[in-house]
Length: 201
Ligand SMILES: [Zn+2]
Image (cartoon, rainbow, N blue to C red; front, side):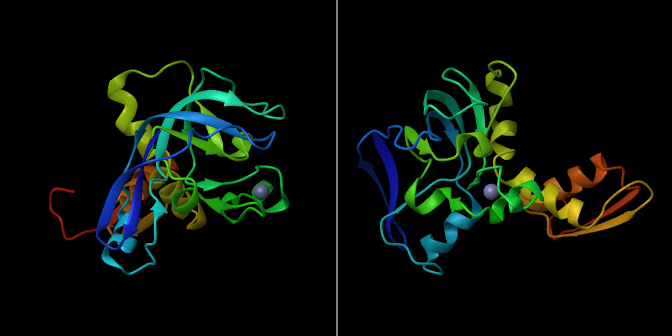
């Protein structure tokens, strides 16, 4: 299969790699329908972070092709949104709502990489969420936003205890900030102040 590699800062290539397969019984293999370029991909691109043949991509959606024997919540044929951090969903940290700090946490970019045709996703039960049925094409961009930025913005609004009657200030209007605005509204915040340098946002 083909996959995107950040070979060095500013050097991106499409490489041929072995097709992923189920290794652990908690794995799933996902055929990727769409994958984002995240703002954080620019850090290694600019040389702010190490870039040495990183497998790129951590915002992704796709169709499950194969699951290990212990995977219970997704099955082949399911359309799934995947989290940008692998989490088992069962450890104490996951159960407390801090899945990104799971004892088995692993970032999807770097070693897994979803700017590719397929990906092996460890801990599929904790990391993948199946959609009800197959989404229409026009929903694809919105579902991609649920892979990273929606969860991150929601977490921020939740941590700030946004809720009915509250005034919430969101500092920054990137994708995560805008999702923080939507999340705060969903949680019932009465007044939301978005701090921005972009009038159109
Ligand atoms: Zn966990």
